[in-house]
Image 1 (cartoon, rainbow, N blue to C red):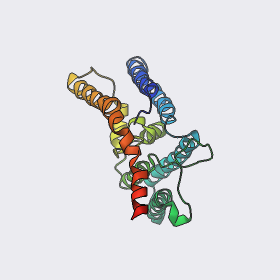
Image 2 (image 1 turned 135 degrees about the horizontal axis):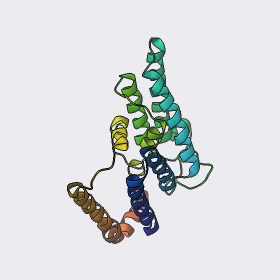
Image 3 (image 1 turned 135 degrees about the vertical axis):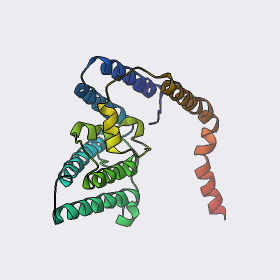
Amino acid sequence: MFFSSGGELLLVSGFIVLQLLWRWQMPTRSQKWLLLLGNLVLVSTVVNFATIGWHLVLASGIYALGKSLAVAKGNWRNNGITSAIAVLIGLFVFRNYPKLFGIASYALTSDPGSIIERLGISYILFRHIQFLVDAYRGKVKAFAWIDYLNFILFFPTFIAGPIDTYTNFKRWADRAHGRLKSALILPGVGCIFIGLLKKYALVPLIYDYAVSYAPFAESMGDRS
């Protein structure tokens, strides 16, 4: 997740506090619905709602297929996972190499007409493939649609991963709250502080040089 404004940072911080307080007081299922709502709101700050809707539909379809693969037998099982992975790889190629299909590029804009945006697409498609393979191999022991949607749209990893496993994500989602551990909090706060230092102290110093490099490089290319 990245923050293009201080408002987004406050929004994320506020949601984390709300989720923490809700986790102490409310049952696990309501916590998952709150997390989904937070994921939808926070992810909407970096991609448009059309893209989020596309991800919700695709995730629901992949979840249903994975659940079927876990109990299916025979050729349908093999053909199902092969076809699904082929489609997902096709989507990856279509999205990341549009010129192969006669499309110049996909602009990263908030235009509602843009159904698929580049942000997060590679990581999410790989998560879908990983889930299908694990379901096919019988490694997924517990299925929950709400957990899978949260797994796909989890805002801290939506933009740039890492590619977690659904089983590991669900294990933590089902885990009852416990006492806060300083061994986990202190490194986390340290990483956040370093990130803020880079974002608001280092980036302003080099931003103008970074954004002016492309036109400079193009002009040098024209001269050569």
